[in-house]
Structures are given as structure tokens and as C-alpha cells.
Length: 165
Image 1: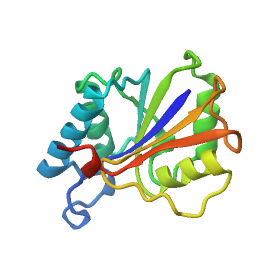
Image 2 (image 1 turned 45 degrees about the vertical axis):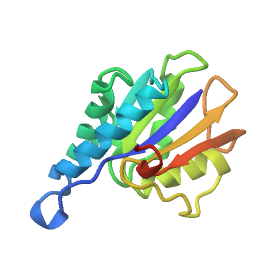
Image 3 (image 1 turned 135 degrees about the vertical axis):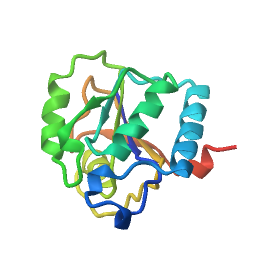
């Protein structure tokens, strides 16, 4: 199984919105995210599932991934909201019916995505994986399911600039 962590694209300034969850992607954020999604599609990546934070900027990012034919319509997962629960996600993952070689992408926020990736890959967090906006982390497990604190491989950590022409 492969698990990808995709940070939302560049969003509008916090000062312009009363609620953080209402901040949309900027034009630059939308454009850059579309370019990254197109590049991932060109590389042959396809997800069996797309889970997204309920916040607008993450949902918009997930929709861009789906529109690029990288996977199915995104499913909102409350646990991907800022300060979400890795435990809740791992419980969801146990129930997810997918093939052992399935690919799943989580669209969310920093520092949560970096911390979750650290916990799953290394068994602890140290705030070392800094995921840039529209950046991606990939973890791989030889097992049918990724579990925290097991033999998982960090095989991808890149910012969008390395994926763009």
C-alpha cells in the first residue's frame, strides 16, 4: 500500500476571512496545484481514494486532483481538519476496503500532515517533515495496510517546484 500526503495549495490570507475554514485557494494556488496534478498524472500516478480535510482550500485542492483524473471524487474526512486525529485516520484505514497495492492520498494541512507522516514512517514526531503548499509525501508499506510504528518506507518528499516544468 502507498499513502500520500498532499498539502493544500496556496490559500487566501487569513486576515481577509473571519473563519480559517473559509479561505479559498488563490489564483496562483489553484494554477500551481493544477500543474502539480497534471505532472503527477503524467507520471502515471492514480489513487484509489482521495480523503480531504473539510476546510475549503483542502477540498478545492482535492477536487483539482480528481479533475486531473488522479482518483475518484474526494471524500471529506473530519480527522484531516487542523489538529486532526491520526488515530481516527488509522481506524478508518483499517476499515477501508482496498487492494494491498492501493494508493490513497490525504489532502490536508501542515504541520499535521508532516507529523502524521513522521509518526507512521518513524514511530515518532519531531516536526522535521515540512511539507510545502501543493507538496507531497509518499509512504510505502509491503503490508496490505499501513500501520504506525511498523516497517514503512518514506519514498517521496518533494515541493511543487521539483514537479513543475
